[in-house]
Length: 380
Ligand SMILES: [Zn+2]
Ligand SMILES: [Zn+2]
Image (tube, rainbow, N blue to C red; front, side, top):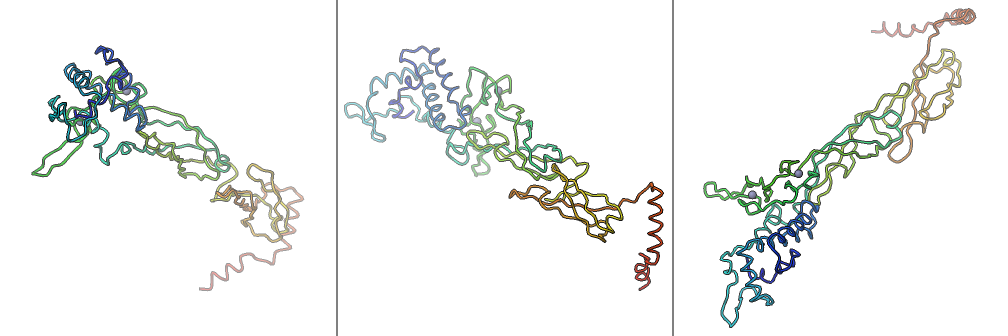
């Protein structure tokens, strides 16, 4: 308690009259502490400041002896500003107000420790980014091509909904840890080296819970599931991981939310396949269509069939490229549909067809398609 503390109006801070009973003070403090507790205010610096003020005020006026001394000091010096350092008392005598409480260590400093002495310093350092979260989803083939909005159910750890993350039973608030005085750190002496390690009593939190929340047993954390809508962009491939910023676990004390990673599985299509930004399809053709040339209908994905012209003498297995019928690229343009022609050998021939093929055999008897192969095989 330092001199400047006498200038603070603790009653005003707690919203109670000077004549308030201990019960009234306690009630008002609890309400205010709940309202301004940093864990319930997403790291708002203002709320944190208020929480420190009301806790500091409560620590003094809830203690009968300290309250009496505070009241006496207020009535004596209340309105005066006491310059730090010189602290002249009435009549010119030097009067150390700090001695009034017989305790030079300010409560304000102790409480300040909760917020200031964290690794990294200021209140902002309490802000912690939420964890990244991974999940999976399975898309129909077409949704992967065109993009889709999917509903994802995420399970993760978050603030306990019963106590709002404070870990304290309803109607109570966490107390400053008595072992580390709120710093969350404990000094350890190792052969002359002063080391500090996280306080064992409060596990580095700086606060301890006397009446634990029955729902989370004082941890302040709870498993919860939430449902979110996520946009899967067009053109996602099977096995691809999509990053959705800000949809991961919520941050703590005003920290940003983590990212959500969605592993996408794509159901295969009966007809179409994928090759990067292109779609693929295998189109059955007859031997005569390839030999004589033809115009054939090729199906497209989610669109009308297109006509592809097969030139005479097209080899089996040739790939025809139909532009603009593939997968949507990032820039909005479309990949191609790659149509592979595959000869279908007729199984049940009509009499007429058989006779026509017999005629073809005779007409082409001189051309042995294996002549070149056999010659090359002998070459070595
Ligand atoms: Zn709880
Ligand atoms: Zn501690």
